Image 1 (cartoon, helix red, strand yellow):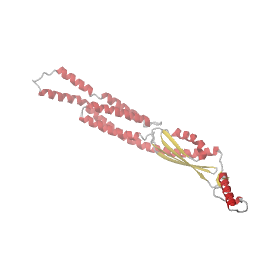
Image 2: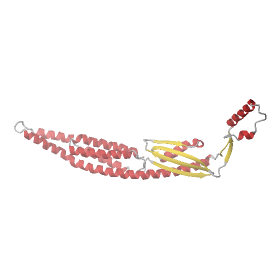
Image 3: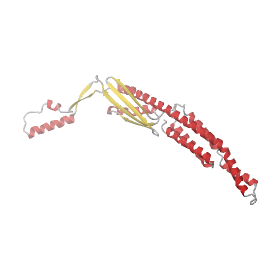
Image 4: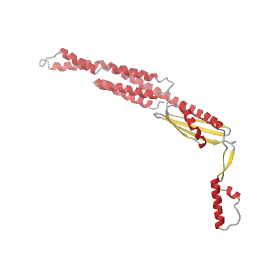
Length: 292
């Protein structure tokens, strides 16, 4: 099953007052590159997250966004910002001294200052955090993989159509190829006939020249290899493993063979078919760049 490298998925989970949402998006990339943006409380889990993602997504530029939300029953804990409280106390002491104000600094004045006392979520057991993250992450990966499979199937159909067109053009090349040497021999004989009586014609030499030309423009080996590569390429459509790199290699080999055909053809009609094949292979190559 062919998978695209482009996709998007989202998952959400709630456990013990903790709510996590995970979003994953992926685009084309030569290798597997995972970037994670998560709350600081999850920094220790980033390697586990990357490992989990790499087990399911082998290639692509993968961006992961993890957000932590506060549920209604979440326990909130008051926290003292000691450096800020000390700064306010020092400031009030300076004011009392500079302006000769009697009395001490009431505690209520200090704690009423902004962000001196704040509320934050109570720490959850790490196992609960991992469990919540695993549920949300799995849901996001399932969603993303579903999109990658759907797009991969569409890409597969498009490549199959283009390869069918390549095979039709290849059949024209195979039909045309045997006539190239024959027609060249006919043209050679016509040119020699115009000089009849002026020069001596050696039939053996003519046969030798025709044989050399036929060998030079023979593309039978390239046709065999091209069809072999084409068969291997189609065989990758139904595999379960990532096949993008194999497809990329086979497209290069197909282009190599068709380029050789073009350089050896020495025939305008055959060259037109070769150029058309190269154009279709380029479209296939562009699609392959998106395959995992």
